[in-house]
Length: 546
Image (cartoon, rainbow, N blue to C red):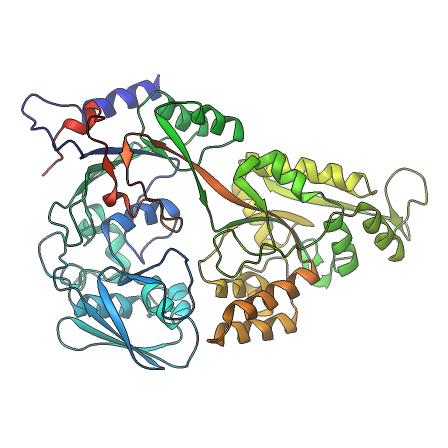
């Protein structure tokens, strides 16, 4: 009943009233079905994919990552608010497009760039972003439309750091609001940006609406209205597509639902690679006690044996079909450093059993479980019960390991409880899934010795990896090779069983042409979409709000 009321309200909201003028035949509306709500879509203020998706329609970056998503060097970036040149090895110069305007008509200036960087680099305001910008020495306005960014050292991702972590913000609207109060301000309730869409309204728990900026300086958007329609349950999301309420859904699960959409004549399924990697993380310290090594998993040979016991190719094929690949290590499908020929481990259960036997693990009492010195090879595998994919793969992992004499207890937990135990190190094996940064330098957070105080909850530490990370970050000649050295060394240590690097299956209505989906920001190029003339739906015909 509740869903029916939401759908009826949505149709009423998008109805064609008698007084509405009709839009050109290649213009229209897009209703995007989402599972998470954007509550604060202001860059640098709140994280989360839902907020980012909306923010990337409201706000532009200085430059955007190009199609190859290469984060090292000065090539492959696409201008948005600015063009750039290099003054020297430590200084980048950005010239703003003087046509750019905030949605209230005020020009975007160098002062807005400096303002945003000043707040982002303040450890008291945004400590995490300040760490990411630690190599930025200064950001200075030179006149109204030029910005100089100076760095403390030479390294390969200077340009990436300058344009990815910070969006310019409207200083004339925010400089009188204390940073800690922006989230509760009038500006946060109706953000003013400089992108192809402007804010219209948000109905908490239901929908969020944006309208096109007709005189957007990079070109007129053909999709005049964008509505993000909230449905938290995956089946409810799918039903909103199948009954024609929604125009796009970014992540169809499970595979059986992908087939249902693909069978429709009015929708297409688009496979989009992601920055996601799923893996079984080994705790190298004792369960709940980081002062002592794990009695089983601190042994690298045991970890290697457990990895070899699983037919990851078969597991991923059964779970994802054509929408997933075996992970090559802590590397996603979209990472420019990936090497598809590399494998973290091979499937060889016989070799796995032999390796465990050499480490003293044998079934001495005939119960089917390996033991050593009276201790059974029994481990707990924690996973969040809200993830159907992880539940399915955890059961497969349990069966593969049972076949070589390893007992796995599956511990299904509510999301908050799972996260708390993970953070405290209360696990033997944790089923982790990470949406990684476009930059491989993010590996420092989870796979370096220094990361053990934060994201590196498995307590993996190899000084050789730390040294290789430093080399790769600084490398400006052949960074891909340096990063692959990092990945090979991590894989040899088997700190985790790297299982899957999935692609998302998106549903998109077939009436749209020029469909561009940017994997790092799904809907950022929606303003380039257009409706095929003659295929408009009733909701495409009404004039957008002014």
